[in-house]
Amino acid sequence: MLAPHRSNSLPLKEFFAALLLGVDIGGTKLALVVGDAAGRIVARRQRPMAPSGDAHKDVADLATEAHRLLRETGVPPDEIACVGLCAPGPIDSAAGCVRNPPNLPGWRDVPLVRQVREVLRRPVHLENDANAAALAEWRFGAGRGCSDMVYLTMSTGVGGGLILGGRLHRGQTGRAGELGHLPIEWDGEPCACGLRGCFEAYVGGAAWTRRLRAHTSAGSRVAQLAGGPEQVNPEHVVRAAGEGDAFALAELDRFNRYLARGIAAIAFALAPERVVLGTIPSAAGEALCLEPLRRLVAERIWPDIGAALEIVPSTLGDERPYRAALCAALEGITARAH
Ligand SMILES: [Zn+2]
Image: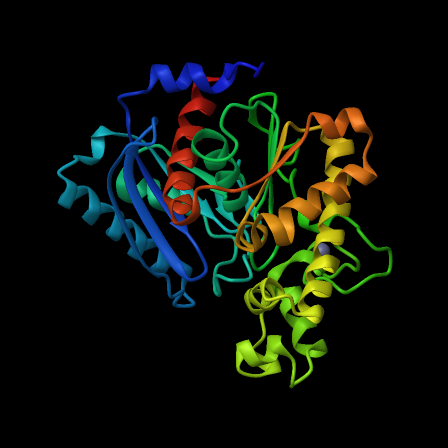
């Protein structure tokens, strides 16, 4: 029996007809969407994001792009109930500021909400990309139907989003869900954040890629698939493991074991109904990642917590940026409703 969606069914019903504008700001791509709270998409667009080094100019460009999409779609800006912005962390959601994301050069303490509001003259809500992606998986993807869900982004780094009791959990300071920096090995591998032994330093794509390039021998199947050890990334490991290559299988086993440690810690802390896993585990698939992972987690947590926990791949794929941006806009509306 699934728990009812208390806090998201009320706004969905109440704002079903409201139009939303969403903008997902990534390090390499900008995605824009006009849609509604039910996830119906009226129009969408994606273009490369090339930060100029001048955040003010970049924000003016994206606001112009948003204006253009509305004009081409024939939606007057005053019909937009809320504009949702997703940006890489760290952000200050309450102040509407992007702090200093490593993949947006020149963006430091950018008052994104104020600048976009001045151009579009509509309410604007800013959400960090992992939280927005968690909301998107919960409303439209692999997290549908549960009230306690944890989403792990798992691409270059590891971001987390927590849906607890049927709503996004931000914590007192808005910094809840930084699951990529759970300490998994005391005095372990250095992490991009400056600490050591973080979850991300073992299962983040960038960290794993660095390790693979240092440990892959030139004559191996993985190096052959990549065109040389210096080109290796997790995708080549997944392919070689699928062919039965011993080195690739050992690397995937190591990845799965570290991933299981993090999920076991999350399971004991939060006892979620579902953990939804993003890019790398979704790409690796059931046989190489998800099935062994479920076994490893089950060995490390109590049976009653394990019995209630599902570990599943994300399902939104390329849809995620659009759904996430709509969810950020919807979050702006529900925040006001509360
Ligand atoms: Zn870290």
